[in-house]
Length: 152
Image (cartoon, rainbow, N blue to C red; front, side, top):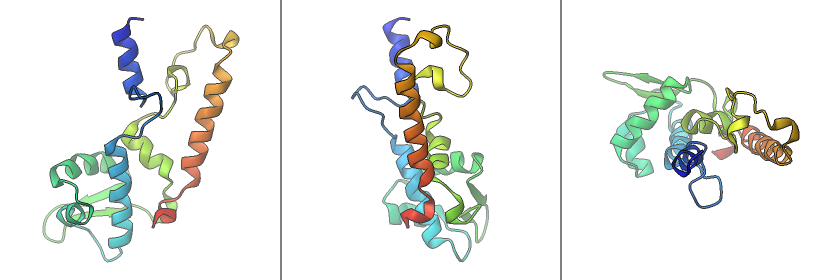
């Protein structure tokens, strides 16, 4: 595999050349949006302009993020008068892992652990695979154990 392909794969799985896994700005802002909706949406839909003002994030950028959250089944959007966004479930029914995964895609640290990865012919003799599996499990367990309601 050439250097360009390797760098592309590294960026795809969330390693940003700094030697550590990184959650993107979109992932972090998605959490902030979800928290904002949990705090301010008990009486109905919340306008994106209000979230943008409270979170000090551009409305245009929020539109991109909420589109992904709606597509991922985490939010509902309503157009027109009284429209805006709301959570689909109670805050305690969301875990942080699902929110991050909708925004980031897989958090698998290596390609062979991705959900739709083809079987690696070297897996049986790979000395590092157990390390990556354990790291991935720790990451999933950590983020899955945190509920949106824990962040309020």
